[in-house]
Amino acid sequence: MPFELRPTPLEHPDAAALIVLLQAHYMEIYGGHDDTPHSASEFVPPAGYFVVGYVDAVAVACGGWRARDDDEPPLRPGDAEIKRMFVHPAQRGRGLARAVLADLEAAAARAGRLRMVLETALGQPAAIGLYVSAGYAPMAPFGTYRDTEAGRYYSRALPGAFGPDGGYYARQIRSPL
Image (tube, rainbow, N blue to C red; front, side, top):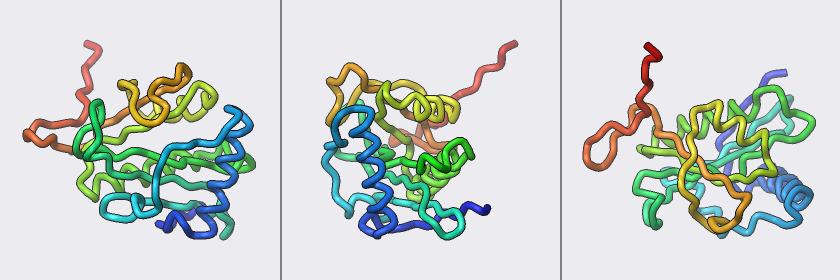
């Protein structure tokens, strides 16, 4: 069963159907939908990106990012916020979310983004595990749910990214010796 990722407009029927499932999932675990304001135009290159993943020509996964250049700290110029990451429940545990995440990071790096940022919550332990295992570190709260006690916020510098002052953003790896 090959997995194919296709850049797709947010308003495409396959993307829309997956987002309906995602919102139903939020309703189930949080009792409400994600009310973060956004528009489809935010996910259009070069200032954004959205991708749908297909298994046997069936849409089963999605995710996107949008530039967050003009927002208040802790967000900063060059940030790309991950939104609408979702894998159909029947396809979970097969590495599809990791593939979507890698594609989002690669697209953001190609667009000159410096850092990926995201918000999630305690009701999504698998998502938190994915991001932490992919090198994301906790950051200060931002966005619509910044005052939510269960909210969790993460960031990761994109490899090879340079900050506006010319400083290297990539995480430094320390030797255990």
